[in-house]
Length: 284
Image (cartoon, rainbow, N blue to C red):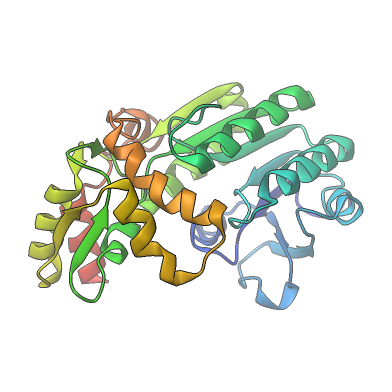
């Protein structure tokens, strides 16, 4: 294992981790791609797939032998995700990982309105207690997800009220992560709140989405009771419905508001606005 790259990246078969892995490859950085299925790993220059899972301590520890820097994308949403994180962090510390760069969430706190932000906070605390150096990338709500909020009827429904958020493009998070991973020693102990350039409400987002997509999209505020009722037909477990609904109530509470300069600090460029993101997506 010691002959493998000393930089390990999780999530390379997913969206954020996949972009980060490609950026690292383009920058000439050798990397170890930690994946559940080696056959699904992206084929990148100087990238070696290594099989692991978050919840298997023995496999995780073996996959991390010789790793100095670990980019840990949060595991897929699941009821036991926090326990998976703890198992993986403990395995990383046992394997001798020196620095962990973790994708957390904006406003992570034990009493955050957004329920999953509480898990991110607990993960951060576990990393801090592990003895490893760390850097936390706390990204706001993804701009990329906003177009998907509208149903076939063009309505975005949720109890967000007139609250605003500083949503960020996934590409800006990936570029920020690249900067940290290329020279992690410069970012030890830092927490970066990664946001877009402006606060926008869902009503304003709906207007921008309408202009940028050609669809007629409207935000319709819901009460809490309406929000739970409208999501009941999906048959999702209670923890997941709570997460869905609390995304909107966190916006209403102002916990996703407040643009920062972190993306510019890390990348040297201003983060994309929703209108710019839609224009870039259209060109692609």
